Length: 82
Ligand SMILES: [Zn+2]
Image (cartoon, rainbow, N blue to C red):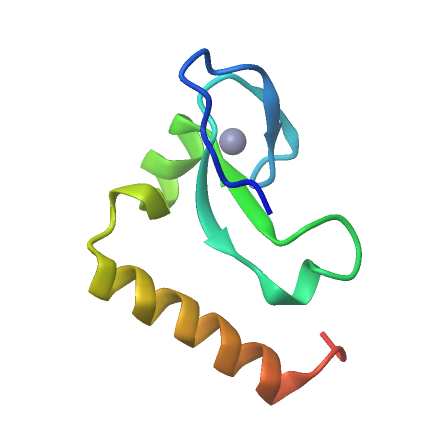
């Protein structure tokens, strides 16, 4: 998996509002979507501001671990039914 955020900020789909944006950052790893189109959930700056989303690459390692752990528990708990 490639979570890199190119400095050139190429246009990418904002998963949050489902539209193209050049300001997207990885904000979540959603295990429930791995079977379809990848686990990375990206949000543009507008969506991040509106919904209080924090880019994963700005989190401290401990916070990042918690976020990923919660994702894993969530996934294991509900399986693929969601
Ligand atoms: Zn957006």
